[in-house]
Length: 396
Image (cartoon, rainbow, N blue to C red):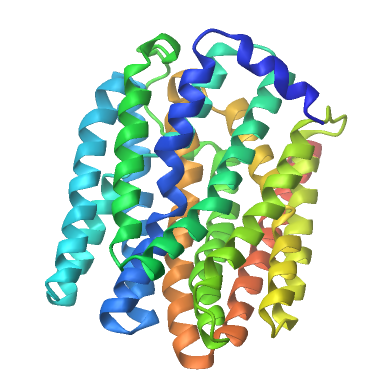
């Protein structure tokens, strides 16, 4: 299973941008849960914690395509440095607001700044892979590797930030987030040898979101993001209700562990079925995998259920990014991939807000029903869009 991955790292410069990109985007699994834990510790409310985390995600979702367009226009290194410095300052401001017990509007304002200055570094790493590789099968393996790296981050990140926040102090998790984001992103920006060139003469006008296939994928990933965002906050509450709040990080790591393992296997195979068929099958398994989560009332059983639920996530994300890479012109690739990150981020925001409200109102176990409904919605949109595409193809 490891064989196909060995040949990826022979190209000069690849190891550097892969490692720096890994460190720089590690905070993507830490920021949301770090904000939730800090705000909950300060206010005692999961609803407020979820709302502030949702604010961060919404701001990121709105800003990510814009920063992606700036990257496509001016290059990665010229955009990354000012953005990451502002991002670190914004998270610091959020912590200061929490420490000073400022009015809630100040937390939301700092959350907006933190999200708006966040960068979709994973999209830029994938853009570099697309630049240095010209073999579609190797690019599939590279995208699979990146999804596995993402899931490794999601395995360790929540557990790490939860341990710091509950074991050291409420601010330690976000401090670690700042350090990793700054160090990884600044090093990544300095690695100019593998940076994709700016394509100044691509077709003017429309954004990649105007491409029907990209719009459909964005809608699907919006619903999937709502699953991720709601599961984050509901799982923290689930562990708290069962008297073991620090176990929340391990429960969330179970989801990512399942996704990481399946992603490693998925990327090692050369598939004969088409990308669209793989995507639809992954979505169907995604919804089916979340069904047992509704039935669990024990932390150990929930860890197993969440692991099984995670098995279909990475293959679905891998295929989605591969579809975008096929649909979007080279000069708009970063923005095109950023729309996927935007959709997930906006979904995470909706999920965090709704998950917090439903948890406070009905308890964690019942709130998981919202996550399951969003998974079903993702399948419905994906299947409906694929069926519509086939009908149009036959009519044409």
